[in-house]
Image 1 (cartoon, rainbow, N blue to C red):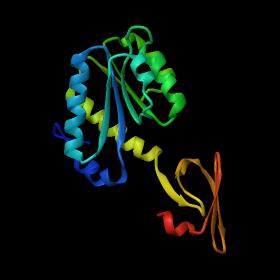
Image 2: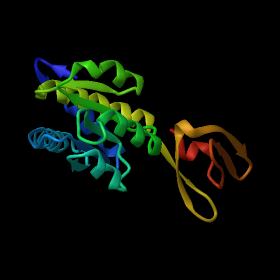
Image 3: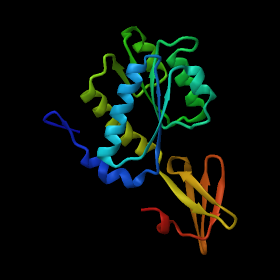
Length: 195
């Protein structure tokens, strides 16, 4: 939200308790851009109280060597070897909820970026105010698509994304959660963990 040229951080400060930590990728072969984005992210995290793990990379190859599961990715398109759009597609295979924000000097890639459903398309040089507005939108959007509940079964604990829950069967002594890829029997009633 923008109030007379000032980003309103209060909305996210309230929501910051809902996140454990966001894993953010910054991948650009221009070190100045990487440093600028890192500084903007760090400042944003301090003002909102959000915890970020910021992974700074200069090539797609470096990203693919990493085992980090990214929540939000800022990716340049024009990079040597593997371009940013190809990288974004590859990363989306491991985390379909990842939000991709493209940062580029080339407007000609806009149609290709839309085909892979990038969240935003930011132009270089980076406008700090626009960057922060789009970052806030990305964080709020990620919060909506990544809500999880903690399900205790007899043997272990599971984090289940609410969007993956197909239905819940209420039982006399608990409930059964039917999710896309699994079924969980728990002694808790839905009212105990669904608000």
